[in-house]
Length: 156
Length: 290
Image 1 (cartoon, each protein chain N blue to C red):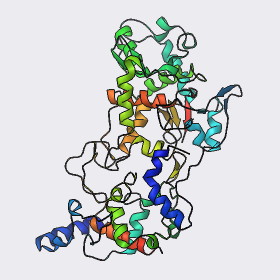
Image 2 (image 1 turned 90 degrees about the horizontal axis):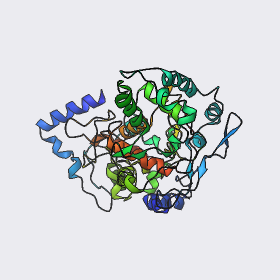
Image 3 (image 1 turned 120 degrees about the vertical axis):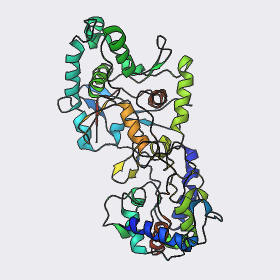
Image 4 (image 1 turned 180 degrees about the horizontal axis):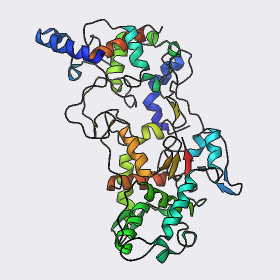
């Protein structure tokens, strides 16, 4: 539903050139791993970001990261660092950079790049194991990235 | 301590976290100490020190070591191990005539106890007649099509995997000892390269999870080293025996990658390489996993 609405919004926005505000994955500019400019120009929604973080089919950040504030969501992983207090350790721009493509901040990290379209080695069509039909969309939309950043900034 | 070089991967994150007084997320949970003794008499080696130059593991651990004590107990008794039902079915198949030549497995190979001891411990292995590294599945289908005049079985199918389990059982307790030199070497090297290549939209290699993070939780699961000495594996999750290539396929799929085909040269190479990472562990199949 949200996705569909977002898609419609993008189409509408595209026609009135307001989409110029949304930065495409390949146009994102990094500075020491950080991304200063909002990807959408629309303030992130922490509640929506919380949902992305805890939902398997969205960000599923909890698969690898523990976060105490989200203990209502079962089974947090321990692959990456805890996200408790992450909003105090990093600036908004640093967090945005890490979510867009953490490899700019931590060179060899195994953390997936959530707002990137390639190049990939043997990319597949989601979790089907099959080759993609065309260019792959990023794992999260620009606004979902902003929402996640907004939620993480509440974790002081 | 795991591979030292992987420290760099999370080094910055770890330092940052420690600076704030939190516990490092790089948990290096050693698998629980436990001894795998099957039927109270067969002691299996679930931990060994790998030879240099094969992997970055300081210790190789059987996947059994990472499972819950309930799951562990099921594997420790053949009456409880559901994988053994499939072994029984395969024994019937072993003795059944199939194909145009009027032969069964037993016609040439006698009993599995006589002829198959040690086979699983050394496979995958270079096969001169095929001119390539062969898996047990490839040898089974070679027999079926070229000697029995029977239909080839599906590579990851039920009959194939059960027959593999019957053959595997004859080597239970023997150390895995696959050859990685000689004619097998280029295949092994290809498999090694695959192991460390980050594939799919999630850009994960086998090593990302199974070398750098074994023992850590990923959501509700605990990552193992991805050792294959316990295959075929009976999974409680799907209630059947699972073959190595079927499991590889699932893992590669989960990196949001285009998978390789079971039985392909690529997966054979990966199997040889992953098997070599467990050289010295006991053959433990058919194992029980969640």
